[in-house]
View 1 (tube, rainbow, N blue to C red):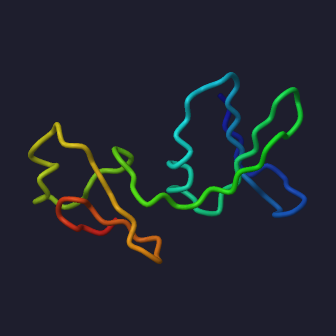
View 2: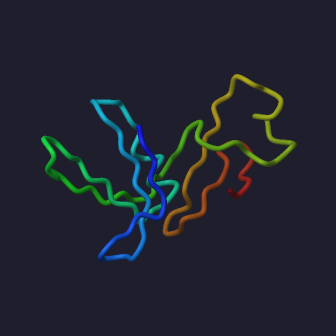
Length: 101
């Protein structure tokens, strides 16, 4: 795995690159959560075979933690950290306490 930051790009000026070799099961929804405008290029044999535009997922599980100190997830350690995206926006809310992330 390699992470390259601020690489020169003809279209955008600068871009970040994450290179993962081999077939690794990667949750691409997490990348869409981090940056909803991200593009994932699938490369095989040294050539780009597919370009995927990621969209923000409707639900993320165990990616971020709720910041609310009174949330049930801070007391019950076994509960999954679930956040749902509000329709029509990029705002996520905790499944349990509705705290905005």
